[in-house]
Length: 109
Image 1 (cartoon, helix red, strand yellow):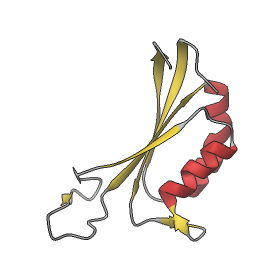
Image 2 (tube, rainbow, N blue to C red; image 1 turned 30 degrees about the vertical axis):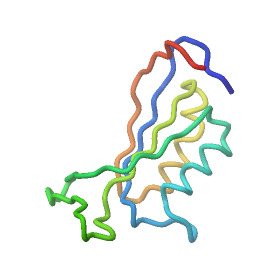
Image 3 (cartoon, rainbow, N blue to C red; image 1 turned 180 degrees about the vertical axis):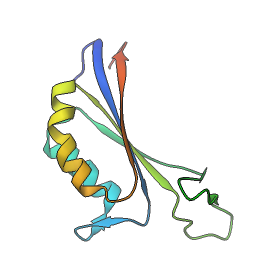
């Protein structure tokens, strides 16, 4: 689906890269769920340094294979479609942050 210019919702999900769901990485399982729900698109980014509720700073160094850094999943679509998938997303994310923000698409394509 190509989003036309206008008002939408931005769904942002923060999870740890080491978290899993049904035998897959949680971030990948979330992308599959968003696609299954017909969300226009999703992007996963990996944080390079972060801290969360425990105030422990995590960062990747040259010798680190993994520091359980945050994976950020972003998706933009209509409020109705985002609200419809939120219960499933919320059930999948046992530890993390999920939030919604207003978004305005200026150009797509």
